[in-house]
Image (cartoon, rainbow, N blue to C red; front, side):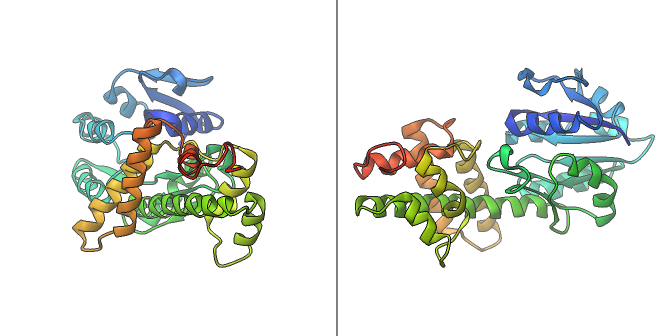
Length: 293
């Protein structure tokens, strides 16, 4: 197994392709963004060609529309008759839709598994990222080497669709952690507390969370911590809230966090990094930027 086909777009797709190209022969579906191309990567022009010439196909789309278009292409069935193929969905999918499409593809001899890469910053791929796998354990073992070439941490989450469900859980908690951390840091700063001191205390107490561990120390030095955009996070929380409502488990706090992200996107621009959220509390609290004083 050494031929990997990738279809997708965005920063995560670019990262995935560049990582895979270090160890495998990689073919990518023609995309508007040329950043997917690098040394050792071949470009193809349609799904049929991508599937026919690949042992494994990875989807890494940053939009629901592109992901749905790729997964529902009739070309999968045309190319699957010779041998059973595996499609790994590393995109940002809805758990229920993933299950429906997996069932449809299985009827034409294709195994779809979901393995979204959760990362806020690809520079921290070794320490603060993970691939969340949903699908049969036997399939995971057969593709583990491919996935590990992208990210060393792989967590088996159960049946197909569970990887996407887990990603939504993690994304929602990460967003809420960041928002409350900025809010409380602004309150502390207006009372004369130093960001570095708040980070030290929080990270040694029950206030510890992912944002206090990574974001507060970086805030004190005005360092970048995330590649994620405000629109990306708002979309994640919107998808998480919709899935939760379908199962009778409404996410009230996450829904409020999504409203905050939507408002921030209107003020700062949806393509802005979530790091820029700090500016809103700095401005509203009258604090000098950067680093909340």
